[in-house]
Image: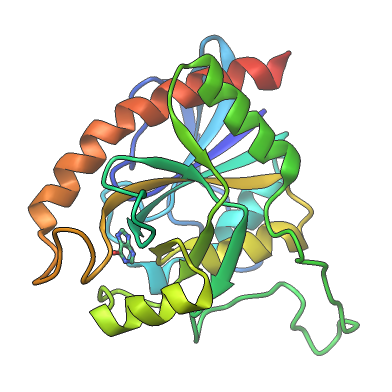
Length: 248
Ligand code: HPA
């Protein structure tokens, strides 16, 4: 069964035929909301809205550990994380889709590991390639079949939020090698690896990052919502093919 984590602009999955919702409690507290079970193209999937059903939980307050733990308890075949980002690289313009292959963590003060109990042995995980290559391939293949254009590869910079960045911060992220910037990629990606989940991100460019493109003087929020709404049609097309490919 495929698991989908929906981000900003995707608190619900309109192509999903909902069967039931289930509240799952975890040793780390409650996830962002009940898990929604249902079917896309007659295949079972589970969906979780990262920011809560009504988009009420800001990026720094999301219980990432509970979210990942709850999904892991269902032993999903893959976890596809939808995430909106600001485009830093010039070709990552609003509405474009990317399957990133790398991530840099600028977040702080979040619960970022399952391995922090005093009763636990010190555990390190390999994170050289932060995203699951099979899940990335699934997304890329699904996009191809759906005839949706996506960029293969890109470096995701995970910032703390909830404020957007300054133009100088974006320049620094670019010097660091980042192509896009978002607020939820970490610790979500690392926690997925700690649990051994097949996890990858489908990033949706919602806006030019601060100081870039048309956003030299500021970021127009109204436009972001319109861009996301349009792009979610493309995301849904890809997800519909991804569930098909996953079942084959
Ligand atoms: N910065 C950080 N996170 C984001 C942005 C951005 O410009 N756009 C969407 N998520």
